[in-house]
Image (cartoon, rainbow, N blue to C red; front, side, top):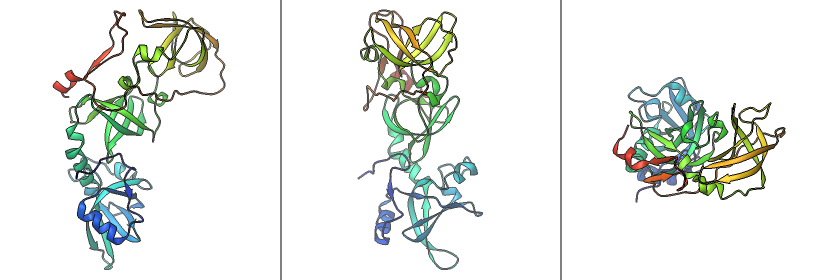
Length: 311
């Protein structure tokens, strides 16, 4: 039976398994995890499994390490963090003590071959945000394998930073947008966060709600009231992107995909970030249309085209 592939820090912990359980996992090729205790001068990660020493040579620390495409920094930052692996053997060290030989690279190769390489653009998968850059968030899509979630794929609403939408360690759902020139996944989340109509249905004219300023223009201020929904308020001095405000919903116009807002209070003392609300949580998307049927402006994603034109 093919094992389920998950993001790192989601596997069974090897630290407290008995010798018999560890041998069984070694025989079956089960992916386990344990906290890396050190990256030593021999360029190997050290672990302890059930009181027995375990090592992961540098070439086995990540798929590509043996070929020289993985830098030391990508390995030494595993120290103190749960790291997944398969147990490749039980040897003895220079003192004659037992020592498990581990491979994260093999776990990643299995994950790619049996899971990730079976997916295509439009497929939805769970991810974990591992770090954030100005241009996007890197996510673990399985066994520590990284994929990019670009900032422009995080919402239809404009945001200034990926940190406006996600945080390191957060578990999220994404869809595969395409693959880059190196064959790595490029992710998107905005198609899972609802269409204009789905988001607008949560609001009523006459309500006052919390919003986040996303851009300040000469003709007005765009304020996000949900991760995939923003409205326009009249200009107001002293506003900056990222600022939390309260807004009165003056009008909702589906035929123009517009929401007219009035800023009520622009001195909210606490910062605010919307929780992600998923309208789609599993399966596959061929096409996603954000726009309302009556609006001439079309905002859509065609995953089938991406599937036919990889890279």
